[in-house]
Image (tube, rainbow, N blue to C red; front, side, top):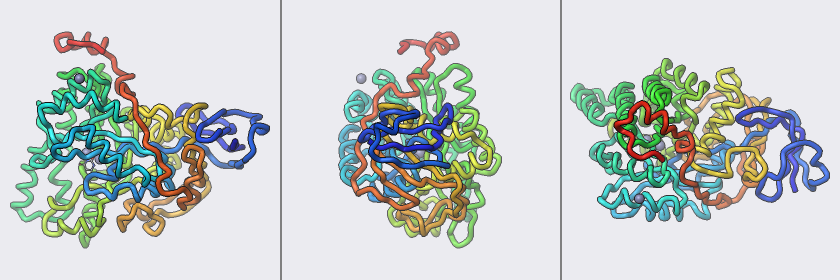
Length: 475
Ligand code: DUC
Ligand code: ZN
Ligand code: ZN
Ligand code: ZN
């Protein structure tokens, strides 16, 4: 058995000096005086130990993602589990889509991996396929209110039907909330006036388009009487909509992403088409929104920070398809590698969030949101996914250290105030000081459980008192 000794253990609730005993792939004990049980000692004096990161929102295989070859980047950054969104091809059932996607990850992924479904081919029998998802280890399904005219876009009636079925099977509804018609309206106007540079992508999707859609999604969740999870919240107004709905008794939750916390709209206006690197949806926002999001994650109004990692095949070159027209720039930016580093350096080290909030946001709650039973906590019986973090390391994030394989680093030039020194995936050392030391395919598929966090925090009684006329069937 392995013993990680003399470190400071960080959890979502507390921190304490303690040793961690690992038996094979599992945490065996946390405490003192465990030496006699160990045959392998790792000294973590002066270091922090926190649970391996859980990135509940990645696109290794959608939006033109690079598939799972580049998951080494996750491992070196301290993320030991990813939950990847599964694109649904026309004609495939939701379950078939998951299995096809899983086949691309198996034997390749360097970190453990689970899946969220995305409904992209809505057929009359699609809602009925929701009941199959737990069998495929899927606990969440995402639908898009944006991208009208593409397979992503879903009508309200489709969303309502899937919501209705999701509730019966404990599947968490996730929504990408942006108002597509408002975006079309702005886009047409910008194009007509000849405004085609990358920064116009953000002008075509101003904050109001997100807040409006979030409020609409919340209303749909009221009608269907389901818990709701809003992915990639990027604005103050959208965050407040989530917060108000929750305060009002509705089970509405949300995450934000690393880039919305630290990158602002000025990146989109960089010369020589550099701004295209930062085109994502929802777009980067102004500093005012960033400040609100920091408050939101500190206070728990948003419960997780994901990367929304989109490593486009072709990287920056691919984005040049939009040289003449911002609407043709593929959406999405990479960020799986430095999610943890950035949140520590810009959050913990600058006093914006506590170490406990940090652990909760990067590992503990994302695991709960995604229904991953043995991930995200340093507790006996859980997977021995652990990061030994050196808080004294000082460096600069730069492309030469990047393993995401896209040719640019989203957080180029940001300070690293500390870094993951050693990363363990189920007890295996998979990364050390920025180098991947595991083997291709060492990541396992993780089967999520239904009735995840959004359902655990479901409050039907409160809800029923407030809207008795909507309240048909409590869980
Ligand atoms: N939605 C995502 O979740 N990621 C990238 C682009 C998008 O629209
Ligand atoms: Zn059913
Ligand atoms: Zn989205
Ligand atoms: Zn995404």
